[in-house]
Structures are given as C-alpha cells and as structure tokens.
Image (cartoon, rainbow, N blue to C red):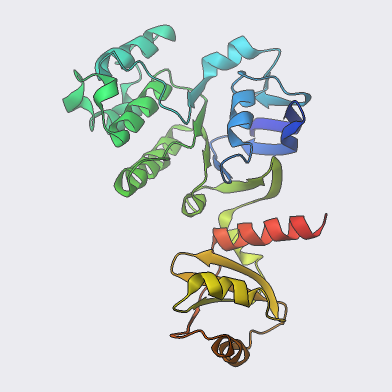
Length: 307
C-alpha cells in the first residue's frame, strides 16, 4: 500500500531549480530516507509534502490526500520535525508537549505509549526551558512533539544534524521502534552512514533523484574496481592520481583516498611506481568494499558525464 506518492514534482525559486522532476512512491510503514548534501532539495521537498510549499509542476499525495487541495487534512495526519529547532524556547519541556497535544485535540496520556521510550530520557528535565536543553535533548523533545498526536506519516528533516554520535545512534534506535506502530517514517540526512539504516533510500543531488533502491541493492550494483590509498601528502596525492591514465575517479575519504580505475583490475604496482616518481613517501594501499558514499559519488560522476 502506498503511503506517499510524489509525481513529477518541479519547484523553482526564480531561475534556481530546487527540485527537478521528482517522482517517488513510499510504502505504508516504510522507513524511507532522502540522502544528499546540503542544497540537494531535501528540505524543499519536505515542505511540499507537509503542505507548506506549493510545487510549480506535478503533484504529491500523502495518505491519498493531495498536498495542495487537502492541506488542512494533511496537517492533521502528519508529524513534522524541521531541521532547525522550532519549538517554544521560553516554554518548559512539559509545557511544549502539552501545547502540541492540545493543538491536535489530544492529551499526553492518550498517546504516551508512542513517546514513552523517548520521553523518559528527558522527563527528569521536564521543568527546564526548551531553550536551555542540549542538542540531543532538544532532538528528543522535538520528536516527542511531532509524535504526540499519533501521525500516520512522520517527516524528519535532517534530525541528527549537529547532534553528537551517541545521540545519533539513540535516535535511529528510536525510529526502528516506532516502525512497530505502523507509522511511515520519512527522513532526510546528509550523513551517508545513516542511509544503511533505512529500508529504502533516494539518493538526491541538485534537485534530481540519482537512484531509488534499498541500501544493500545500491551497494550490490557498484561494479567499479576500488581501492584506498594514502601517502604523506594527501593533497598532492589527489592531484597526482587525477593525472594517472588508468584513473576513473579520486575522492578524499578521511585518512585515505578512494580510487577507482578505468581498467577491469587495479594495477597497484603501476600506481605505486607512478607515485614514487612524483615524490610521494609512505605510500599505503588498502582493499576496501564500497559503501553508500562510494555509490553516491559514482552516481554523481555518471550524471555529470551523461550531460
């Protein structure tokens, strides 16, 4: 059963195209991720799906309600957690939650089972003003407020941006538990490692969808020869590798460069000899398996080459 249907959505701001012919179907109860960097169009899409923006072209439906014609009803059945903390900072934790429950004509007690695992972590601070909470606590409060009316679809726009690693891990564990209540959860994130926690993902760049698959399927379709390389001068390493005949792509990933070859097999001896001639020292190679970020970069390169 389809929960969210997006068909040929185009949205522009003047000459700037934010979304370029986006079409996606999201299943009921699915944990779906829109994965891409800042400026990819994720927030614009979420604002359209929650009836806060009108597209220039195309249509979208949430639980079979049109995002333009049925905006009043859509706002009753969705939960929305925007990227920027938007709760009332001069109200306490408890007051914020009570306010959002009353807006939707419900009570904290009625749907407490939905937020219990989350709220128990911030309940000791329920009298504290929201503006005085840490980043992780603000995140948990915002999620509680988005859930308190038992939405059918939950939109989370970059919910873990600026949050510490422990809070990020806790947050995704909460989302997995929420799936048990049948809520469709749609998340956007620039963090590629979070992609693998979703049922399916849409990789998005410059307002275009590059691929829609399960994370495992996207990784399984990566066919390029891949290896990690490092030397004592990483900046020069990237520059020099780009001038090697067999090079297909070179991207910096932390302490290593991820290198793909035009050849069917990477010739390490040739690369090492080439880099030594260029003056590189302490050259190291490491066999690696592709992850979502490798796949994303390959798709971007393919899209660029096809133009």
